[in-house]
Image 1 (spheres, protein in one colour):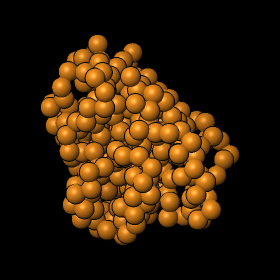
Image 2: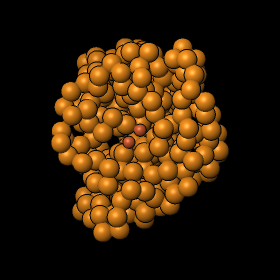
Image 3: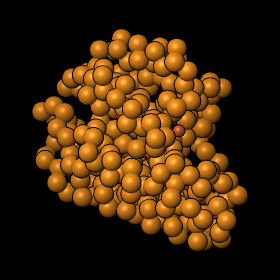
Length: 262
Ligand SMILES: [Fe+2]
Ligand SMILES: [Fe+2]
């Protein structure tokens, strides 16, 4: 099975010609499946943008924070549950040796500088997070920690129902470890880490990897727009998709990788 991975394509910012070049780049890889790790567009057009990719091959994806812009987490998830491509339902068997799970993940205010003055548009664009722009850091982090904990629970439930498998691929939007938050070739600064890492999901992944040493777990994520790899333990690797240092990401959707799954 041949797969293509894309992330953070933010198609709502992309010109028609560039969109066509992006579709051509995916088609050149002749994928059987397309993996999408979030920030595809915004709430009003995310399904339409997925439909463009689904016209090429079946998609499996998660939603990123930007996908929720202009709506609420609850409302968009209600819609996503009906699509067939949104992963947080139940594990998907890709091949005899490989299973796929996914969870959106959320920057959960649990690492880096929790007093950070970096502010996100999430906190005015997403209904459940409204008000977080103008509150105390502790209150903001408490709310985000609750969102992150719910993501970890969703992943834990999927892993509990997982059939025995040699290879596990996990799609998520937010890097699950601070060491996997790449930006311009380096780890993101402490001021960005609270919003760039889902520590709670990382804990679930690490526990699962340690409990199943014969299983190889590959996590694909995005969100930081910088590319890199981090291996916290031998059988768990996190690949963060993005653009090389100095290369424009917004308006420049690319294929992160294409490979064959056995
Ligand atoms: Fe993004
Ligand atoms: Fe994002």
